[in-house]
Amino acid sequence: MVRKKSSLILCGAFLFVAWNALLLLYLWGRPPIGRLGEGGGAEPGGKEEWGVGRAKGSQVNLAGEVIRLAEEVEIQLETQKKLLKQIESHRAVWARQKDVGKRETDDTKEVKEEVVHQSSKPPPPLKDSVDDRAQTEVQHTQKPVHTVAPDAKLEKQQATEIKEEVIEKNKLATSVASPEVIIPILVIACDRVTVKRSLDRLIQYRQSPQLYPIIVSQDCGHAETARVIASYGDQVTHISQPDLSDIRVRPEHRKFQGYYKIARHYRWALNQVFNTFSTVVIVEDDLEVAPDFFEYFRALYPILRSDPTLWCVSAWNDNGRDALVDPSKAELLYRTDFFPGLGWMLLKEMWDELEPKWPLAFWDDWMRQPEQRKDRSCIRPEISRTITFGRKGNLSYLLKENYDEKFIKEVYSAPLVKIEELQQGGSLRGPGPYRVQYSSRDSFKVFARNLGVMDDLKSGVPRTGYRGVVSFLYRGRRVFLAPPEGWMQYDISWS
Image (cartoon, rainbow, N blue to C red):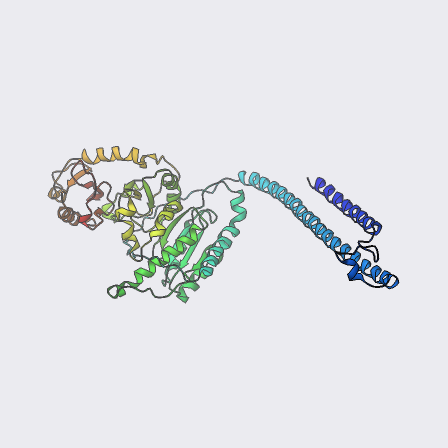
């Protein structure tokens, strides 16, 4: 291809020289446009314009003819210069294409050699340990906002930083690694220097910095927290929310200024990440993850991607205290209609739906409203953040068409008991499951408080609830706190 284009260049140069030679012969050989005394001039009325004696006019006419000829030659030369420049520019482009093609060929050879070399190495062992620490209930910080950063250039610069610091430094690894999806971890930070505890665990447990880049987005402009984050060097990517200004709110909402800023930060940070990646796991700076945190989300990513009735995966169980979960069933997973948050995975397609209407405040409660949820569910674990199945097992049972029938059958085939029977326990035999039935908002709250589970409802949905059912362990027995059989939908007036 390059040889063919070189021939075209030589041909063009030859035509250029030949054309100029013919042009000069033509110009020198043709007669003058007008001569004195022959009734013609350069233009109509030429005789009068030239109107001088023959001898003197001949000298003037010759000088004018030479000037005219020189001007015409100059015009033609300018045209030919442009042609030469075009030829030169094409030659430069062709040369660059040749060089790029050569580099691509060399790079392909290097990648193939690296893949062969990598495939000969055994994969790193997966961690099978389980975090056996007693779980502590993490205070759920609410967030909100729809204020765009005032300087669009800063936002563009932040997006560029992510691409440069995350993609570029991982470029070689991602070019030769298996085509596994990259799942970035977005850490939402502000003014807690204890973010170090969260980052230490994330870095300790991740198996691959390339598959799990950690992006810390900091609001508040807190210098000491920024120094802590910077101390991790290239182990994390540190971005900063550029808009630290106060947000104008109604007088009665001045005490909620922080919630407005949190929502603004979430919106900005998610936009930065989704400029580059197709999914993300969001955690906050006070959340400590379990050893199998990364495996948990990687295993559930295909389910989230394939089931349109799901809109998130969460690593959090709102009723995940020791007495309410079965530590021997760490592999248990549930669908839930309640958005849990606190370590959750979101797809870019879902963010594209939510971002245009993102709220000014209290974003997590906003997520639980029917207008956003649209009858979609999340996946949540039995034991918060410590799912140990890794990449093993068939998770297709979590798909709605497989899950609902089995779940309803299990719940409503369980013996119906009174709270007193559970509390006394003497008349019950075996680990259950048992069912306690509620029929109103008030009865749900009374039963929930007596059984030790969270009793609040958001848009009518109880925490961890699926089809109105809350599943938990009570004194070693599995219990379903459930509405009557035939449940149809949530009543938002119960909130």
